[in-house]
Length: 129
Image 1: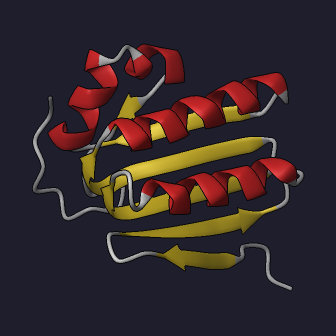
Image 2: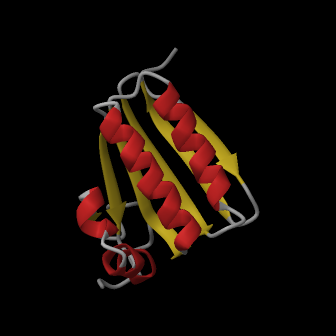
């Protein structure tokens, strides 16, 4: 068994990859998170929160679209993480993700962080909000 595991879930619109093991886990989503693909992200986050995770990073650096369904998934995961004393971080780099989080007030609630697109794993073509 290696120190970091790599597990992936995919729909036609989004791919969700989990790396890390034990208490520290990094979840990366790539693509669009909308009403048809948000369940993929929700299922992955719920499964992790069912386990022994204590430090959860949700990397949305390569997400190109985020709608209300994706926002609901993030809010629900945050509520659950807070109840379980799990530290949850949300990373974002594109306006398509940052603006919906800001407009809804989730940016502050989630303690989201704007990162360089290359740091979050994207090609760095996206500008700031």
